Image 1 (cartoon, rainbow, N blue to C red):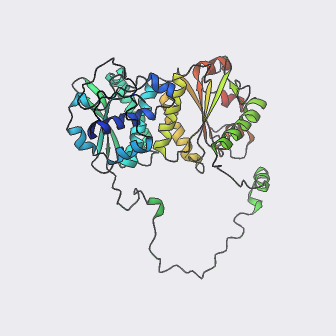
Image 2: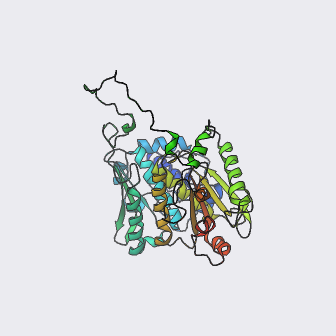
Image 3: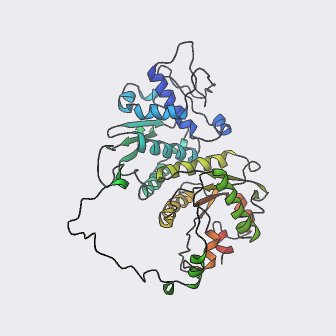
Length: 407
């Protein structure tokens, strides 16, 4: 988490807040190895940005994540940025599309929780040459617009707009319209709304629901499933338990049953064989889920195949009870592969406990066994390297691996 504070003086409040915001964005970038090669140049308000200057670590002041979040929440970003000219706005030196999207979704997710109506914050991306391409910017904004349809706050009380200069798009500004004291459909306490008493409600009336769930209406397979013992710990609190269960599922379903053509075991996958990374993230909201996903994409993009062959991104608390919402979220991610030029980097396979094929083929229907090729203990995203997928497919069109093996 490098940033440069020169001299023996303690940094002033504005410099500390500026460094805190930039460090907060870099924290979201993942591992130390990733940070060391993609760390932002953090400058105090008195120091003009210098291209190509490498930041050096400073142990004089290294705030914690909690402290950074508090600073972000308390920062009056409008006043802060009005005091500084263009060349002193915060910068993030994302160089690739995944790094840019990780930074943007981190900004959106944090603003959705910490900014209030009228607050805004701008971040520049001087290393993203793609932002000078009008076609790329148009496709990027189209992707973000599609994501608004499934988001909780983005597009409702949080917006993101390009930051323009005479040279074109230089960065992005996030602005909040959130009123923390509001009550209504999109208020923060929307899940805890209380309804007024209904004068026509009869507490003494007895409702007869008998027969609604009779076994006669169930298929034979549904009856078998209903007879199984109930799961007592649906979402374990210990991440290690979730990882171990996920590994057993991969070993049985993907390796032993050969549902995945390039998975040898729960630990090894790919061509050539390499380690499988299991990552558990307990995000619950859409914006945080996007940020967490792009963080994992950045990890696999920066890592060698010998270090990470493929990633299984486990989201045990995200859309667990709504496979429809999970599929909508998944659709927005697969749509970026071709549109934003990442099809040559990665391919995605999504899993969910209630996954059902809806392609109209012989696999369609909730009770068919083929659905279990894509059913997992918790919602998951398998991030695959495109080169390995194409090698394993041996002529099968990209993206159709699981469709072929589950027929």
